[in-house]
Image (cartoon, rainbow, N blue to C red; front, side, top):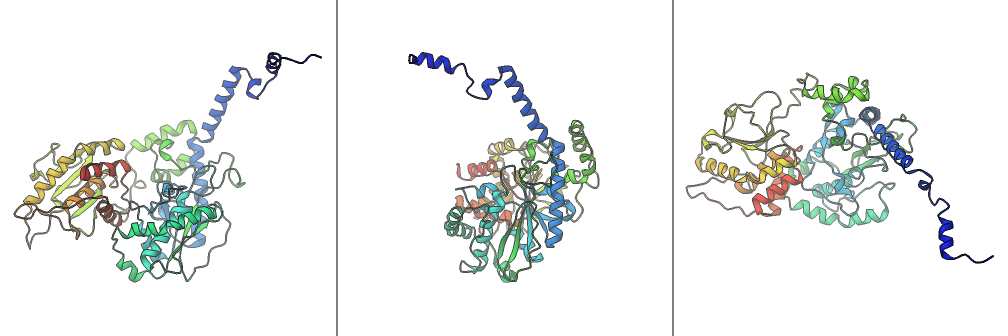
Length: 485
């Protein structure tokens, strides 16, 4: 037998399939790809997501009953898993602050109100979920532990017996734990630079806080109430789709995650108000049902109770700056305020006003669409805000009998654009004691603005109004206004 040439070997190799895909005709290969994509879309359908959310909410309710602790939704995902009637509040622990190598204590998300709930009830349960492939979101496994360690240090000092960081062994490796621990001093110093007013809490807070981790669909018995710490129970609502045997075949792990991409406008409050109707509707009919719920007048079940209403929030230590969401049904009256700044596409208030009104109208309408476009629109309208406040404070001469002018910043959510405007006012027109800097008559004052000051003033806002959650784009717009960067 003669040896084969290289060309002969190449021709011989081409006679045999080298991969599974080469066994298929091109058309068949495309059809299979389309079929797999269709199956994936079907498994992640709205109906499957909603039924999975309801399934997981039953587990959350069981844990709440077992531990007898209040439920706190880690937004934006957690509220889907908690019926409004048993939800005690919201928190804002972001997974990005716990990502590998990006661990951080966020000055934008202080969550100090959680301390008040913990002190009142002896602990709390923070609810979140995560998508396929992970057993626990980084927000619960790392962001919450970092927050607990920083808060303990601020309240009790670094020498506190339980001031170290606690992470779940099954999720966080010893190496990662050590790396986070090595950064704790930096996080604590960053928090101290915010000059948070924690004196009252130091006087009443009796013991440190500590995270306790409940894996998905845990069967753990209730934890005994420790005398040495308050438990922050980190509860992952969704089970691992690949390992759990208790969920139905259509189960979607972390079904509520990234709801903007699948909910078609449905919100947690609407879901819980119309749960039975939504769960019993076919996938084909769900989009039209959701649309009808969104455009129809809200029912009493959709509206917050009088005790849950979101009034204007005074931003301490000022005595005159407020933030509020735009009212969903009835307009505000301007008579209660000396100045109102509206950040919205349209102006819902009674008095018609041009974009740049006379200061006597006491109303400034900044035409800002929703989302990132609204944050970008702010960049081109800051001069209206500055001129409006300059004129207002110039006309408000100091008097022992007359209080400072009451200023309301409002936007549809009361959490984003209005927070950006209030932050500019705090940095540019308010001193370190929270006093408005009046203009004219020798009262000119210059505030030196840098990133440290912006963080400190933002801490005033998030402490007074925990739901304040300005987007990165809005904060960038603020920096452009204050520092030109």
